[in-house]
Image (cartoon, rainbow, N blue to C red; front, side, top):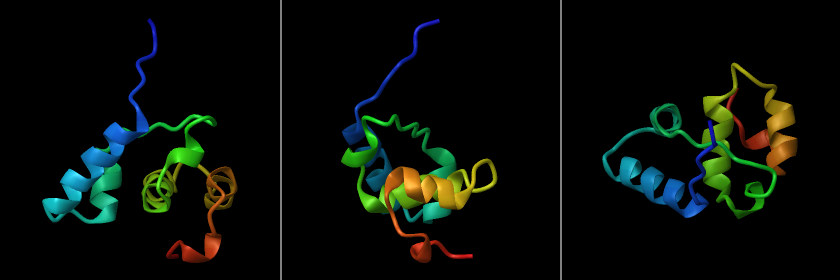
Length: 78
């Protein structure tokens, strides 16, 4: 089965729409089906990167995801 890809701008629009509906970042992270490749990770806004990290914090190491996205671990709440 071929993979389907969405441009990163489509995720941004989806996230902004959910934010306008009053959802928290955690709720948005659970609803957004964002999968980022190595090629797309630099195009992603920092706030979206943190939402992805929050969503997958139970599956992957937070430190590893911060390194992947090149963001600070200090900005992630415990």
